[in-house]
Length: 124
Image 1 (spheres, rainbow, N blue to C red):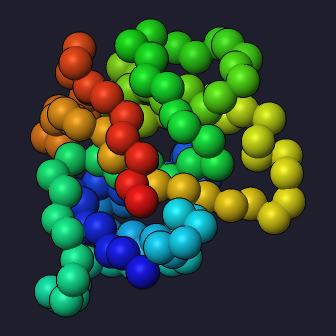
Image 2: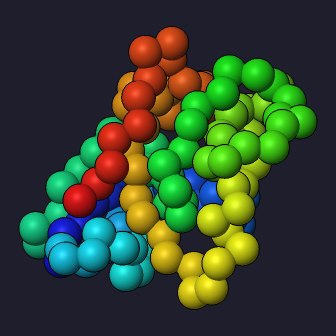
């Protein structure tokens, strides 16, 4: 099991942004096994500054303020109110829901914004 902590955690299918959370990932499948608030130091936890996204598929960053699109993959953006929003892919119609973790860097935590050179990296 691997653990990652971050300033922000976004759960795309719930459209939920959380502060200071830890994500646990299964070493073999790469699936998220659980997430919980970061309240104290947890051994063998890697701290990542910025944003971790939980998604069924690799999210794509959009710089458009409004997402009126359909996509084969999950698309995330930041709206004018500084809220992260997502358009989900057809992968979310599957049961059971298997989430994987993706690290987006760089990401401005204070302004809630992506940078032009932001990239999506799978956490394994």
